[in-house]
Length: 350
Image (tube, rainbow, N blue to C red):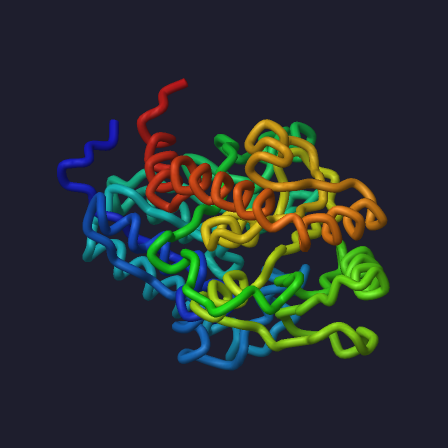
């Protein structure tokens, strides 16, 4: 049973990575409300110890393919983590998507500390990643970003001790409506043309422009979009909130037809900013939000264009839905809620 009177949290993640900041800041703020926190930025430490480590490659732990300096950097990173843990003696460890942490390190963390070890792997993978399996054999729980029963069962069969479901949340001190003179963006989209949904995102944005809904796209690698679509670079949390506040509608496109898997970071943060969210429907969305009450969902790109054109001009209705969605997020989907949920895994004996 994990007590909250003297909660000592070791937070291991990609803390300095720009793309992770909207999660990291909010998560750490919520953790610090319930206990003392020690952080370990494993990617930053690895960069200081040696050359860039190929953490995203499928052969991540096939060390014979690496240069000796890379192998030494990884081993020294894991050694540094163990020293921090032994000194700090946490009773709860949050291990973020850590491809650089070995199964041996995960095992030793459980031996040298009294900690409950929760490993959060927030990417969708239909196969069990070797490092997720290796860590999961020693972690008390492996938390996934969806509720696909087949994928969850595959992790259990691979040897993970326990598999749970955990979302991201939002930080309302970062994501809130900014005071703007007018909503001068008809529609904004936050994201990149990633492999899984890049074509669908591109086609939907082009359809919006052809339907006289001018998109503003925030994210990298959109150079091939036609004229009429305004492309911007990746933005930090504050600029994200300002961009949403300037927009009448924010668009969210997720092409993965997996139960409860979506870009929740974009969904919750956008809604917290008081912007109407137009989102591609995915399984499970209706169990969390109500259509045309908290947000608006669509199924085809033609329907998306029609709804965008309607809500661009239906100002009162658009603002009512956006505000109701914001209140729903604040009531149930902040990082404070999420940290309470993740700590409950340690006290759940079922």
